[in-house]
Image (tube, rainbow, N blue to C red; front, top):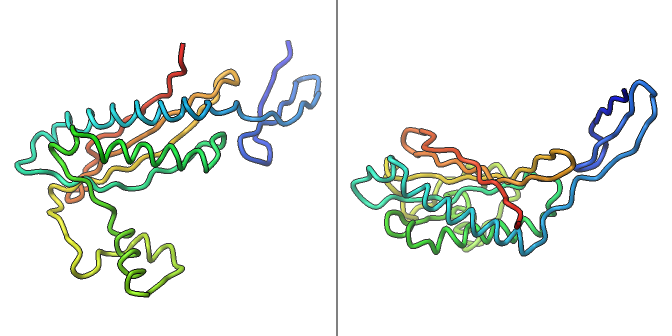
Length: 196
């Protein structure tokens, strides 16, 4: 019986095949191709709709005595198969859908993260920095609204891929964090379902 083993190659999303015990080397194989762009757009829309429902149905959100604040944190591409240009389109689509979701807007109002606002404020004042850590850790500048941390939630997401039998499975993982307590309110995966 020939055993097939895979080891990572140099280069994104590639594997090295070795046939054992024959010692026959294969070659690097590429990751499965990502879904077509229209399918990625559908995936982004479906994810945003499900995510909005999950946010408003969460007990921590339902228990608020006033409108909550939803800070849109980062959305990262952890997939090697999806090019950054396509990911940017998916990222913008998800964020746009969340911003336009009437379900979300009925119970929360979305805000930009503090680091981005500090950077924009500095830019508008003619100040610039090339230090990404300073940007990421920046506090809101004076005059920029601050919100009750008890009612403020940070939404973060990542896009992953898994490879089973050389078939790519893509999924988003979103986490919602309550700012005051740093409580992880929920963490959930949203799997890409190819059309039948």
